[in-house]
Length: 413
Image (cartoon, rainbow, N blue to C red; front, side):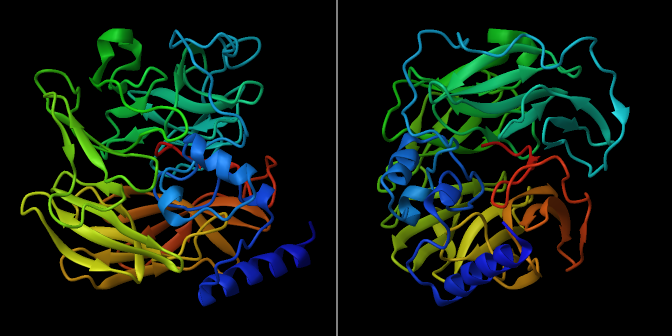
């Protein structure tokens, strides 16, 4: 695709979004697996893949459980968490590479193609280009798809790049704000939490069992509490039903499982939660977008709601929320705006001139990292609550295509 074609395509996309037209702005094979850039985009729910293969525009209510993979087949059953089709136990060939400072340090682990970049800029070569993941105690949890079977896995990767275990999952991967614990759903319907990958079964536990898997698979999106989710630490995992209709729920390590929102507007999905007790809730979906609310668990009431913004990620303190336009489609969002949760006032906005924001994650209470895709590739930007912004990595030169970022922020999914 030429630069001119890409610019025309993107201009058409942004124009349509501004008019809130109910059309698909890209060809289906470009949109598949990427529509709806809420915090946990490209989820592994099979419903997203089924709708994509049927050549329909995915409504916002279903997008909130969107699939991660580009495969058209449902994940098959498994009797063990270790994949029979897992990659070799080493992610690299030959001698284990020593990390060397060769990349841009952004203060957080990220991926650039098959390169794992540490917060200080040191790198490790990997044998797989992971779609997403997280880092727990220097161990990478890399999310990948098996193209032959349509199944999805987390690879447990050591600091030197060795794969010690592959865990089959049927959901996305949720990560706590302090990046100390993750949650995912296994094929048997167990909602698992993991805080110490090196400890094996001693570093993980199921806090709910028998959850639906299949066409509509439950999807964890946020974790509050911890850091171990064991008997001594209460851990709460918020999850969406995946059908775009049923209200979101929260499972706790004390054995309870209840609705996130109490009252007349339980919503159809949540996208994030903070330790302060705030939750971003998608209240309803409609043809021209969606209505969202900021819910306070302590008072069991909405602080405010809006049909003009989609609420994305809360900063760890719960004082600022990342937002975008109410109508989500295409490979990313035209902008991300930071809104004060107490006053509902916009304090900063990042609007990439010739690209879109694919996903974002908070580095700390004042700094948001955004993955941007434009016609020249992907890059990571730093946005401050003071309104400042800067690109902190070069545009990737490791390949990809016009609608697939090479960079990966390790914030789950």
